[in-house]
Image 1 (spheres, protein in one colour):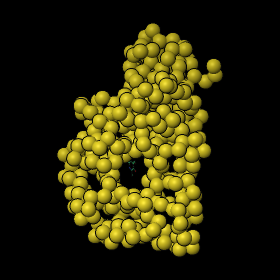
Image 2 (cartoon, helix red, strand yellow; image 1 turned 90 degrees about the vertical axis):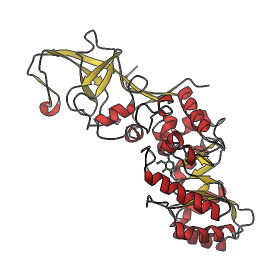
Image 3 (cartoon, protein in one colour; image 1 turned 180 degrees about the horizontal axis):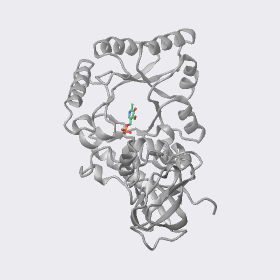
Image 4 (cartoon, helix red, strand yellow; image 1 turned 60 degrees about the vertical axis):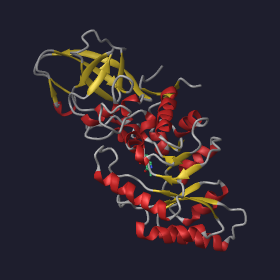
Length: 367
Ligand SMILES: Cc1ncc(COP(=O)(O)O)c(C=O)c1O
């Protein structure tokens, strides 16, 4: 009923992908990364579906953690950027959130907080972030021993994990990844081998030497491989989101006529053009070029003309029988989201996280 656009979320595929991540880990420990509303799939839905498999979840901020707690998720929740201001600390303590500590200002804020409010029963799990070369977040390796010892000596510290993030793990030959890994291994050695967490999805799939300790798979859980097609592990992933709609109009235009805003697409021959209920107002990228694949009635067709807010137009030459009402897939089971992303000069992450709230999400294969 109503507008036919829907994002189907296949929870069997999600669970399959999580288990694939686990299989890469020597210690079989993986926090499922479900920030940005579970990469657009619905964080609560994803957490509920994985809660019997995953020992914990990672999110970007306290607001995302609160949404999960309010939905009844009791699992450990890791705040990947820690806190943004000290006024979050009472809630972090009260709700037992684990936190990344990446900067000295955060250590100072913790000291102040616990000074004012001595920590009888408080026991923080701290994921101490090392800047192993990406230069985004984390302590310089030369400072890590000092910060680690300081944190370890505090009564409010229950456990410290050593963590870092890879910049180039999707490059299977990356020398830089080896350097980052060596940096962490050296530090872990000096600190007496605390638990570590290094691997994002590409490292989980392609860098077994980085798969000790706690994995942090994100995009792979949702079935989009961060690796080039043909990688044996990446190719085992199953798409979780299938963005589906229908043809709402079909017409034939003569050779030479143009389609859509600015007349970007011009028919070189008489062409059947279908109109699909989906546009940039739903999160389908306006940057999509003519020729971007669109799956119509079981056939691979091509986008023809600029994406509008609520509609896109498609050249139906490859699906001559296609009629109003036929099913269309924008990405998902039949059409790799990576392929669509490449036609939009972007990556799967932005398509999945960029799907807007007006697109209803529908779980399939709930258990
Ligand atoms: C700190 C951290 N860990 C893990 C992830 C998951 O990365 P991916 O989605 O590539 O697996 C992210 C995502 O950006 C991240 O920022």
